[in-house]
Length: 174
Image (spheres, rainbow, N blue to C red):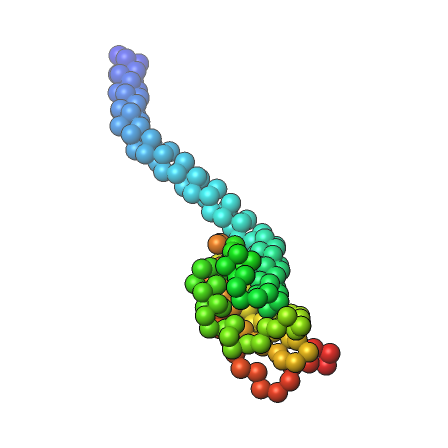
């Protein structure tokens, strides 16, 4: 009799434990799904962190390419007649900048056929963000002209520029 009572008691305890375990299954499924979502988010954050860590090198390449394009842009518009701007500057600058150059800057700056402008200085003012800001100086034998330019690295063209006044002489040999 004692053994049968013990077996019945043990069976009831085991049945109770099984019942509790079956009732916890949905909660465990939810916890498993949450753990999988957390793992997926952690992996995404790790990839994002690796991208941020490796981005200075890619940003350096972007800045270098942008600086070259700004230099080419200034040399192109400084050493060509105003009438050729719409064709020669296409792809290097936005239409707004080309119109400004044609109507505003070119008449006030002497770009004669005999003068050749060099670009001794292309200085980077702001390197972070999609818009890079430059200070550019174009220099000929007779005059130096300074510009501030905004280059959009996404569109890969100069999107804004203004002419600055230079006081004194700019000499790149000093």
